[in-house]
Image (tube, rainbow, N blue to C red; front, side):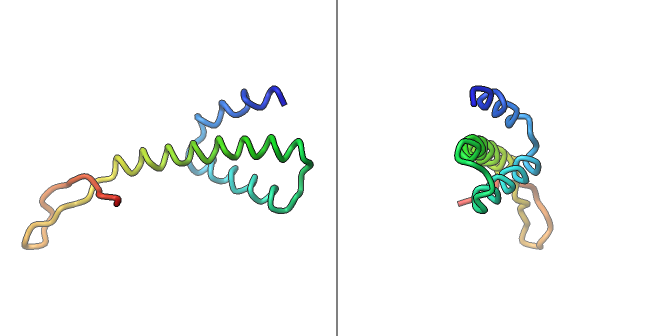
Length: 85
């Protein structure tokens, strides 16, 4: 299991979709009990790293999204930061 932290380092290079797909696969394996205890612990740790990576990517995406503002006539007038609360 000593190689697992190194394996988790590659998580930072994954695009969101790939990280999410791998996380879903891990959840499925854990829910089905398809792996032994030691492997369960290892993939759970990787799942935690994937979850944190996905959360960072989503936060970054939210910060880049802008809301289109409309004038009284309904025409776009510009943009402003998206209020996600």
